[in-house]
Length: 287
Length: 304
Image 1: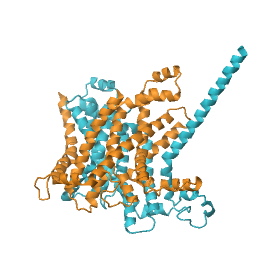
Image 2 (image 1 turned 60 degrees about the vertical axis):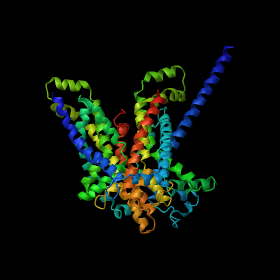
Image 3 (image 1 turned 180 degrees about the horizontal axis):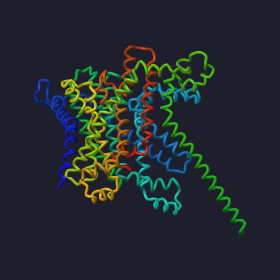
């Protein structure tokens, strides 16, 4: 009887969500579907689709989020393997591995900049290993570096979640594997990996990671700065979010807010669909 | 005959032991390499803030120059860039502004979120799943879908570059996380506690206020710290909706670089590194404090 009163708690929630989500969604739709004079038109979407730079940004975003998610999962599981072995100073190693998680994404772009971390690598390989300098302005360098730095920040998360899943796995399974003479690596491959990858928690984490990387903004912004594309719309490192930002703040083409809204809504639609597809795939792989 | 087998098994025992030892050493090597990979970029950044360029050491020519000539931005430690970023970039201002934004938006998120989380975890009301999914969907909204209309609305309402405006907009970032995380903490309280409390005939609200809420206070603290790190590191929303009066740390660090570039002042690089390090340290400390709960926070309360 009293339980109906509990619905009251949803009122402030819906008030906040209405203001920061529902209203902006409707307003974005309205802005993207009207011309400056206020009449209905699809011209913003037409402009978006007919610009090659938009498709470029879309491709980059897809490549960026897929690669960085895969790298993060791979390295994250590698770190998990290390930490689940008998290892002295485990706590210390775990702490060090977690550190990148606290770096603000905009600082990650700085930390992994050509004149930051790579400067050390460059000089070391040149002077100590006598290798030729590698070209930091080549796409073969900066794309992998961007993906790696995105993964670098988030792989500790994959590791933490994997460890929490392992801690929840029945100890008996490991004991049984040991009785059958499984080596440490076999135990990891045959017991740990399946239970981690099939866990719904890990699947949710991977999907969220994919969505977040799809919207990646800070690291590409930093790199567009390092590569001299600060105000170039449609530069090779423009992800969709960065593309919208440049449309809004430094558009040389004089694009309207309408196009930016159209692109933002398209991104939202893609992340929603992408999340659903990815969840399906993960479920299929897990079963 | 027996002797032979004994010595044979001793040999194989030896071999196994040696193999295990090699494996252990290899494990430590990999563990240390992984630690370097995690920590090196952070360390380089912190050192470059002191104008200590490790590259100079790797070139094999730096040691001769220590304490002597200034080597090409090389090994001549100086705290000037940290002092600069503390002074010129008005770092304390940035911190205070960030904390105001955080205090406001976390208060909103907790006030709205705690009752909702409690209901989602424990009370049987219809439409619960719908609310959970809505909150999950909130996590996938592209920030610019929100930023563009809010920017226009704020400019018209006159709350652009105001703490209230940003605190509201940041709900996109933290509200779903706060609700889902707290939901997990409420769900962790054993059912017996609820039942025992209700047996004593307390009303549901009383049960919540007197029994359940005090038990979940540590969870609220953890959630607050988690949201604080998210807000501290947020760039995209804060960059669009804050101005001179409300700029947060992450934005300030980056703008410092941009401003330096525009005015062609000599080396913005070291200052950027110093400011980045200063921004990083508090976030790292808070994150390590709530290390045990990070998996929970990032997985929307699903992980234990």
